[in-house]
Amino acid sequence: MCGIVGVVSNAPVNQLIYDGLLLLQHRGQDAAGIVTQQGQKFFMHKAKGMVRDVFRTRDMRALPGNVGLGQVRYPTAGNANSEEEAQPFYVNAPFGLVMSHNGNLTNAHALKAELFSTDHRHINTDSDSEVLINVLAHELDIATRGLPLKPADVFAAVTRMHKRLKGSYAVVALIAGHGLLAFRDPFGIRPLCLGQGVGTAMVASESVALEGTGHTLVRDIDPGEAVFIDMQGQVHAQQCSETSAHFPCLFEYVYLARPDSQLDGVSVYQARLNMGETLAQRVISTISPDLIDSVIPIPESSRPSAMQLAHLLGKPYREGFVKNRYVGRTFIMPGQAVRKRSVRQKLNVIASEFKGRNVLLVDDSIVRGTTSREIVQMARDAGARKVYLASAAPPVRFPNVYGIDMPSPEELVAHGKTVDEICKVIGCDALIYQDVQGLKNAVASLNPKLTGFDASCFDGIYCTGDITPEDIIRLRGERIEADELQEDANV
Image 1 (cartoon, rainbow, N blue to C red):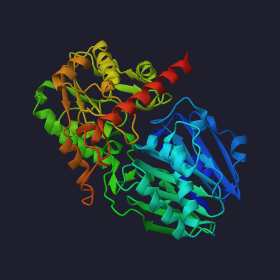
Image 2: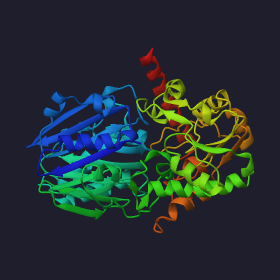
Image 3: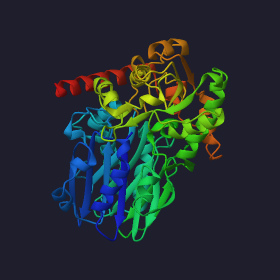
Image 4: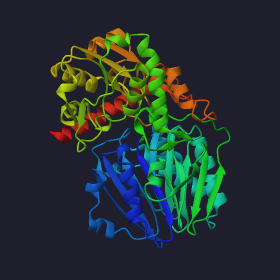
């Protein structure tokens, strides 16, 4: 999960890209980067850290041009501690390319070997995004055959890419002197949308980045589709996949996206309200509402679900936790030790809302269980008689291989456990989960065209059809190695 943005304009774009990345900061807090183009030259600045820390006034002044792209990074493949793996990535041929990628290639290891042995291209990092840009470069080279680049050549290159790449990928790239390219994988797992402003065309991971910068959401880019915006701002689009199907990631609606975004025709806020409705039915079948004094959300993603749940139960909705907004989202912090240390820094209790009461805490999801266990204990320490916990998402039992940091089954508190066993681990008096079909219905009811979803972390079904147990073991090993490098760096 990363946030990407690309712009073609008739005015300088550095500030516009910066503003777009601020609006997408929730999607990645590890690193940030911007590249712009003036004439035939690229100007790039990227580093580890938050957007506001990476870009100073002097850095912004060094990013001239009316075309550019940017990314906020959340590492899922490669080394989170490596400055080299901050995006965008650059290769100088053909034409000169820069690229940012949201997602995760599941066949990056095989592609890396193929690039070396067959395409004669060198990969210098462990990032799957560097693999992806080199595949793009190779296919563009074949499509143009040394001739001037046309939109048809761009689409031919993306068509060939779809046949080689596996996994999830939403991509934005600049082709020096020609324009901006954006495309999604044939399953549309990660989001990408197109917007229009006055003299500006823009693509971004979420609609909030468009609307927050004065653009109008035109539409979502279709699964398998490529959009090419030339230097004059003219938009060319073509379906480049022979077999596309739409399986957007359900976890985007649960947690990843901002509530004020619209993804694939679905309001994220309304989807979370719907999750609260279906969750209320699960609560009623597990606990008598008479045993609940108040409903308290665990900030922030769970608030809409908790409000709707409280309304349907006829119970008071209360704010019991105050969030320190200067601590990042714990789920996307690299390393388990850092996440655990940050929970009590991130949240503080309002003791009067807990003392002597039976409280129902509502969270958007329960992944590793570390945060939930700490929060339940905080509620008890504040004087709660009973602490019930409800999750707007089903149990996360399986690794996610499409760009969310859930690579190891052993890290997941629900893996191989019953709900009662999870309840004991977390330390709550009762634990209520959303069911998978209820979650799908909550989202699908808002867009009848959505008939399938990537719910792999909940049901273990990988929509790309290429994931084997050996792949899970390999990805787990890569993540353990990356975490060890991160911990060594923090010592």
